[in-house]
Length: 278
Image (cartoon, rainbow, N blue to C red; front, side, top):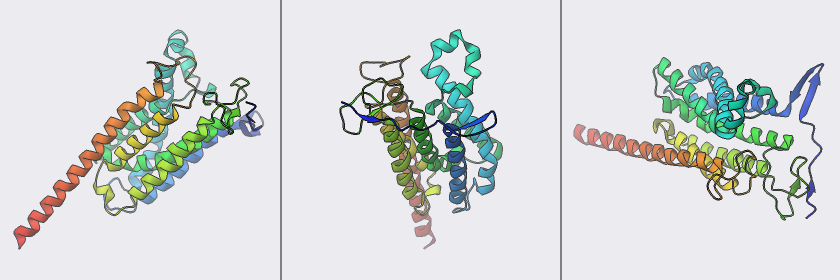
């Protein structure tokens, strides 16, 4: 099992004097900018709130939610014992360590607070955010690959890669699996759904579809991804990523069913009103 040598990619994209710009930072920036542009386009397709101006104002809140929540999630879910003994290190974001599930929690908090202040339904804003989130996931996972981190388990598959920090055996490039499933595939599925006529009136549908899609994709890829060394497997073959994804799937199914039943109720009420007018 010789494997494919890891491509010699410098994690630093470019450097200006002492300032080093890493691919990981660029992934966040590009993901946020493209997500902002895409959400603005979706917001303009409907007259309902949140409108484009609302979302434009929300972007700063989203960025704070991603960074603060992502760091909080990594500290609490993935390395609590270490940071309990070294609490100052939890502030050292530049040393790496972010959690998607934590970032999700941070964005959810930002959505609820912002929506409450603006006076519209939080799920209506969440639907826009959900449709664009796979964009950031795609670039983030590509950056994980460039950094040679979060690699997969050992494999004898012909596409196995020998990662610089993963020993001498080839491993699954699980970051690329995630970029494909959580990024490209999920984006296309949500885009098809988001561009259906009147879908924004089914508040919560896009959010639910994203939660289910991401949860299933992450649970599947965890079968190939090497568990975090400080955690290992939690219950038998179950990993922390799979545990955190389970409630996402359940909540997503609930939101999708809720949106479907509400749409049926509205449709029935319209038919009844039309019949009464006749």
